[in-house]
Each structure stands twice: as C-alpha cells, then as structure tokens.
Image 1 (tube, rainbow, N blue to C red):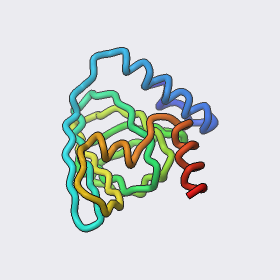
Image 2: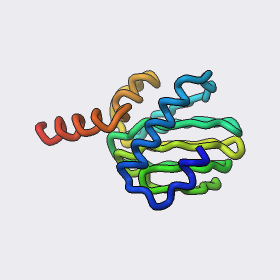
Image 3: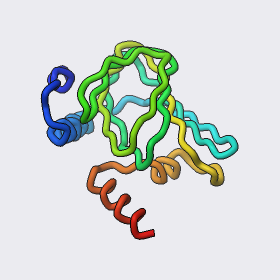
Image 4: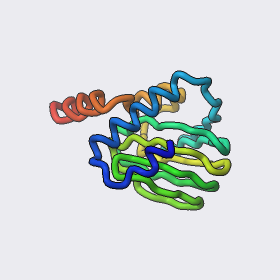
Length: 148
C-alpha cells in the first residue's frame, strides 16, 4: 500500500493496473468481514460499510456516478487520479469508473448514495446492478448502454 500511496506522478492507466495488482494480492490473504447495511427510500439506495482500523481494501467499480460520504474516520485512498487523505465527515461526488484501494487509519463509516427506483433487493443483487469488477466489464457496460 505504501508503494501505491507514494505514486504521485504515474499515469492513470498505470495506477489502475497497480490497484488491480494490489487487489489480486489482497485476495490471496484472509478477508476481513466488513459489515454492510443498505437502505431504500423514494428513489434512493444507500449502502453503508464499516471499515475497521488497519484494514487494507479495494472497492468495486461503479457503473454510474454516486455520492460518497465518509461519516467518520480517517483513510488513505488511491485511485487512478492519485492518493488522497480523507478525514470524515466529508461528502463528495464519486465519478463512474473509479477503482479505489485504501487503508483505514481509524475505524471508518463510509456510505454511497445511488439513484434507484426499483424494488428492494439483496446486497449481492444491488452490487451487480451498480458495480462491475473489472474495467473490461465497465467498457462492455458502456457499450451496451449506447446500444439501448
């Protein structure tokens, strides 16, 4: 993670590749249980995760922009745009197509808010609707959206 966080002058494509490699390494280790809560209300879907201090993690790639809210805690995060130090509470728009890697400095409560006007679904179903696992899947999703 330290190598990723010091990557300030690396091209976005190279950072995406390094984040994916970091995720591949993380997946060879025991996984931390990160509790997920979800809420549905009048065209809005909110997903909340609680990340324990010291946890190294990566996120999925969102198909569409959403709001990210760090309610509490402190994290080091890197995307293809470079490293950021985030201290909650903070709210920002998270663009579509971003993959993150991070390290929780303290326990963190992180929310994402998405437009959604359908029936309540399981966490797995919502993740499938809103995210992809790879950039190749994101490109395919964007291609399918253009066709429809």
